[in-house]
Length: 61
Image 1: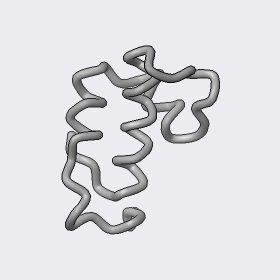
Image 2: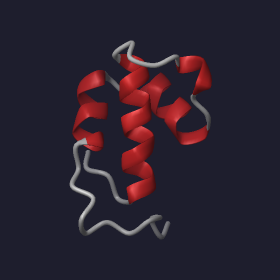
Image 3: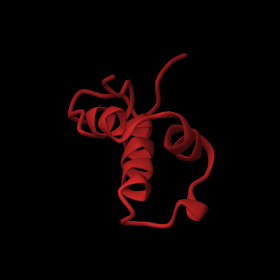
């Protein structure tokens, strides 16, 4: 799944870092915590690797 906003891409990056053991998951909050709990490392990698060039800061839901 590709990120729909810069905020979503950043949250996926934080969750991916925790999933890989590079940071402490206890510090995750909000969307990054939910992503950490529900997505696989491959899904997080796909979302976090989305190019941010053409993304809005926040998605219009």
